[in-house]
Amino acid sequence: MNASRPTLETDGPPAEQIQSVVAAFTKHFGRQPNFGAAAPGRVNIIGEHTDYNDGFVLPMAIDRWTVVVGDHALADRSTFLAVDLKETAHCDLRGELSPIEGNFANYLMGVADQFNKRAIKVPNLDIAITTSVSIGAGLASSAAMEVAMATLLEVLLKKSFDPVEKAKLCQKAEHEFVGTPCGIMDMLIAIKAKSDHALLIDCQTNATEPIPLPLDKDVSILIADTHVRHDLAQSEYVNRRQTCEDAARKLGYETLRQVESDYEPAVNKITTTGQALTEEEVLCATHVLNENKRVQSAANALRKGEMETVGQLMFDSHTSLKELFKVSCEELDVIVDTAAKLRADSGVLGARMTGGGFGGCAIILCNTQSVDKISVDLLEAFVEQFDYLPTLFTTPAVGGARSIGV
Ligand code: GLA
Image (cartoon, rainbow, N blue to C red; front, side, top):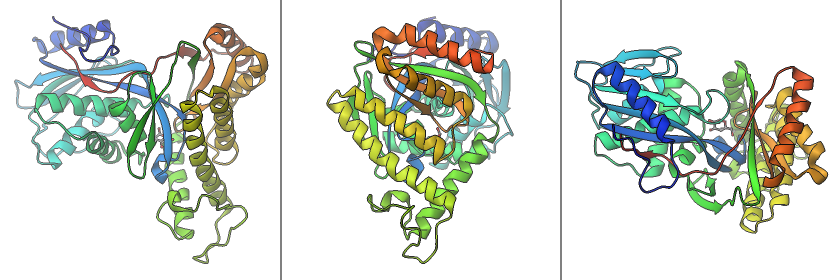
């Protein structure tokens, strides 16, 4: 086997991860794969529940990877092997495709389906997939799978998409095969991430701007996975999205992004369309309008290296997600509140929940030299309340999806 790290980027999935998925493919299919691709997970530094409102987000890709390897199938059907789950699924990629309820293969088939729908005919394939992006942790594991699959198909079919088109294709796969009406943030960052940078995304135009993020030297991003996975996350996501769309419509716009930035929903509940916003719509719209401003302020502060300002904006974002948008949970709040209490002289700069909410991860922006001490304090405070430990890890900001040598 000739598993090598990517040649252009200095980061990428570890050689052992590539080797293990290649070995699993070889064992299962009795031959070596010829193609490989990888895509990273992400944390969102700030800008939550703004992407599907055409707003701003500021994510970075993390050093956790989904790796897919594969080749043309020898039989008249496709086989997907989920190495971590020890599960296989089958379908005929050349025929009419439809989701299989609750199956991991939906992320892969959904992407193939989008290629087919764009008249790029996908042949039957044998594929093995593995991931170090925790599933359901708010680290965009779904997008990592979809983008890795799309990248594999690009290499295999010698077809290369414009990055935004590719992100939209993966987003459509998620909508149609997984059923989550997500925004475009997760796919765009998995595709366009740049090492040592966060990515400012304007979800109205899909314009992106990498912003330097000198992690490790002075500051670090510490991720705390609460291991809480709430079933209601998906249905509440759908509800919040609907509430935002209703608010925008009542205000006479298609999206909340179009609403004047100095408009205050709580003050001006009666709209030009004559329809009053409900209390819930006022709260959600207020969060989105203010969060968009916070993202722009955070991007400005980052450009100037004003990390304390970024940190404060993160705390403000969390308060808004907890009190107005109502997507936090006790476990996330304990992490963020503990970080806020430690703050003064402990090296904590900011903290907030990241991702869709109702569990998953919080991120803490802190001085690198204080990471160990802050971790101990967070673990102690958490275990005292909940009797188990969250998983803590730091990560560099890595580059986006790429093909890999196998
Ligand atoms: C999930 C979705 C994203 C985004 C976030 C909330 O991660 O996949 O599109 O909406 O929630 O910011």
